[in-house]
Length: 603
Image 1 (cartoon, rainbow, N blue to C red):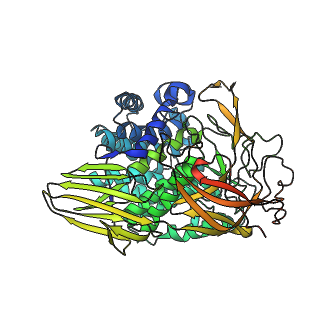
Image 2: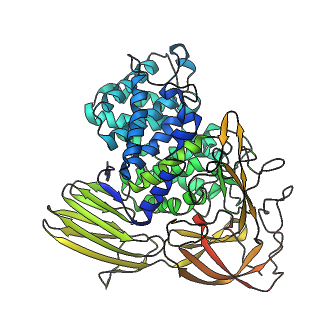
């Protein structure tokens, strides 16, 4: 079963606001980590003396497709420099990770799984013909050591066993050798079974565990899709069953699950780790490609247009470790942090708040999203996510011009020198769909394109605004794939310092965001007016959001969470209005760095 295939970075060309977003990323932290961050610049992976485990593979996993999507020759050369250095240290037996031979038994082989996956990304972008053999040797060595009991899965490798299947499937398509099936079975047998942990997901604990760890869970959702074929198992859509449990007990208004750092319940003042945003997006891309089920593409949009930009600064030089739905300040906690297992700086915008995994790993989210805009199966092409892009592949040229999700009109230009079928996924929330001015009622458009034909398709639809009920009798506002928040104005306090030999220096310093406007409001009712302002140079701008919603609110006595002065109460102390109504502008969740997203309706 393989419904859709991904195109490569030389076949997809981002346009419009999506290209701007990738360019901002390249000019920010992602494009400069190898210049300023010791764990990348001086990593053991390339012969240095700094971190030699997950950070270089994580960073390359996003930096490589970013470089190739933007056709940035300098970045491409820097990616090659890293890959060539890593390959140069591969041992004769195939081992590739930077540790002494005597330390392999205690080296967490999550890094083996991750570098194998990253090397497949590099091959898909570069077509470097030495890469398949490198991956083959890595996996064969991994198999032999696991089979012979020289190593076993533990900790992160045990929790993320399915990540290795990206590389296993890549090699199996090329040689179909039986040992690859045996390796797949060993990994699953030694790996965690998350189905056995679901009861733990229903009552969050202030305790760190691998099977409630939010990033592990975000990765795990694709596990059946990537593993069932080579394991010879039937696909059961287990991801949907687990997704529903996670949503019921840990869901947020933007499609995330709380996890700071482990599952944290339904409270709007618990956080979600940025790594989980990137990994959940990647899982949904894989799940949509494998199943063709539109629900995964729609869930992908929710994360990409809300959760991802919300937790990264406008210039993409800083990011949070944890984001919150109701986040009234990003100030270092003077005492016990609100987070279940994370530290007192986890919600600051900085170089590596709390821990550096997200510094390296958030880089994959936008580039891999861009690579998911178009997919194919044989002679059929589908536009999975309708954002501005072009496809040039096998004689087909398709261009989308749109500012979606900030507005809902689309202009497609299709040219081809061969016959093919072109499909366009229509979101489930779309109303009053028109195609070239004619009303249509469908959730997927299909066009038979003939060789030599040039076709223009103009599409429009409405995305009705709705109030979605949240736990504790709170409410969120949604229009299409955009969730809206009440933004809180803030002042930035820059923190430049050095810790453990790592320098924070502008523009990659840390920032506290100190609120300077009121936040203790309730909605007056359900009167909302959408204002479309146009997309500027920063698509998810905190200063000039491309779309806003005008509505009325009244102040209430909301109060602070017990023991805190910088965290609003989980549930307002009162819903009674204590002021006359005020007109405010809501903005997209992704634009609001400080925000109130889950609000009551005043009595």
